[in-house]
Image (cartoon, rainbow, N blue to C red):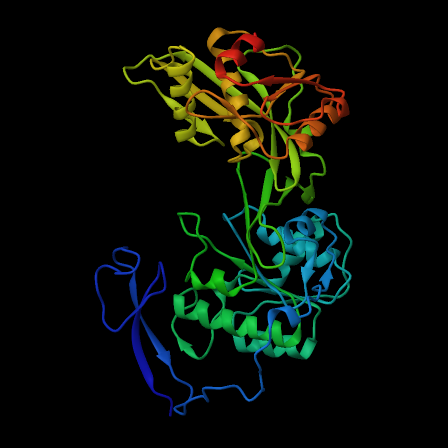
Length: 450
């Protein structure tokens, strides 16, 4: 008979302890240790070495083989994954509740011309069918649903069905009979993930896992889960806006710099092919405090609208508020404006917003942020035909930006007449029809802008 062993696992980091303690020594969190019963299936020890013979090989002699990929019907998903789904890969997608993770994967299952095995531990088959009827997609006759939380039953049905693609929603709802603890605990997630990854690699079947997140925005469960899978995707966005961003936090088969942009509509998620035209609002009149920044996410240039409001502080301490932009970087830019350019902004409230609910950390937004702040402070509108791309240093210099030619080409394609960039960029001016205004100091920038 198998022996039962009791251990305490931290629900935050997955560390194991022989006895209970108030604080986890690994992550420092309090009251996160939970007792779980672990069952050992057999008493004999596994052999230390594999039966298959391996030999040492020089890296020069290794042949580089291109991984075969499955092209999905979603171009945005293909972009983020690096060209498609690799056979035998395991992808973990996380995001806020209700952000659209299940909708994204259900659309993928309905559009793919493959045999898809869709496992749901959260919804019934009728609920999934209602959502599928709402989605205006091509119906896949080879999409099979299975509402079950037992890992052994799921793997048994998967081996019997022999699907080309597996979706599991979600990994936190699965439970293995080998572990005597409730679903969602560290030991259950670790055991279920190991078995699913083993199934994917042995059968060369790609698997998508949906993961819940904690209140801190991290994927719930042990951190080792993100190390075991091949790709970790983050699906985020603002509930008050329609746009959703799909980012790759880890990708063994491609870049982690690419993003996919979707719009949530009543028929599901719609791909945004040209986000610049949608994120820039068409105004009937020019208003102060608005500017357009040319940013790049991965290899995709994108134009964002920056809005700033500068007003006299009603209370003793001036307020600094940001939406979609780093508040610490805003404080740095305000300090540079006051120290290097002589603008008295220390006693004024400053509010900053990137429209569309988009969040980005591209340093090239600095010049557009400063332009919006100066425009609102002096109540002088910026021409709607101007755009900006430049990083600002602590000494007030306009630093060069990466991929300047792509940014300028995107601005020219959308009909902008002038772009402000650093004069340290070696840009061939004869290639572009847009006027390139080169600036080196924050003082020169103010004079040329107004």
